[in-house]
Length: 103
Image (cartoon, rainbow, N blue to C red):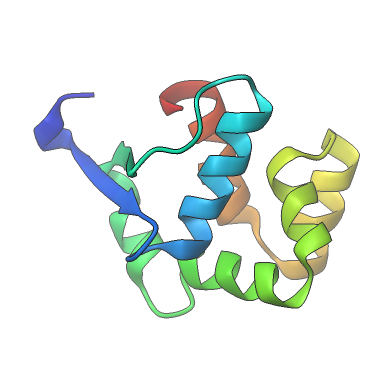
């Protein structure tokens, strides 16, 4: 990704999504402790809107931290159970793309 094609996720502006990216990065052996993560611009609206991905992940983390962890780094069965229980299909898609493509 080129710098002008990305949107930066920071702990201050996107605490739910940033925490998810940190968990995934650390779990898959990549470096954690970043100041930001870059995602393609196509995700901005789904991240930023009220009730969007960041809001959903913040709420999940506050309500059920173990489910938040399962969504981010659980096995496929655990992840799918959380996705179904909390209706997090779009958030899960972004987390999967992060893991596979831009972590």
